[in-house]
Amino acid sequence: MKSTFVVRGEYIQLDQLLKVAGLVTTGGEAHAAVAAGLVKVDGKVEGRKRAKLRAGQGVSYAGHNITLVADQG
Image 1 (spheres, rainbow, N blue to C red):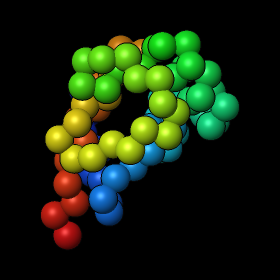
Image 2 (cartoon, one colour):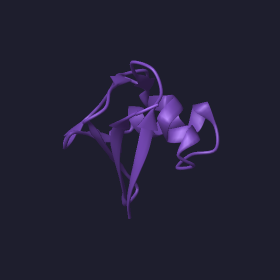
Image 3 (cartoon, rainbow, N blue to C red):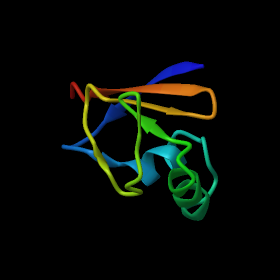
């Protein structure tokens, strides 16, 4: 499943993105998914739970692909 997420501000942390996108229900679940190597950023496994993600990057987890876009407002 593909979707986009609007980044308000300079960046969003990976664990926060997983929560607000509805891919996990808790921060602990997000941290566990990252620690288990299940989350990819720009096609590479990301091990930093609080990695700063910016517009133009892509995140993949559990069959979902999210493209980050800049806030135009």
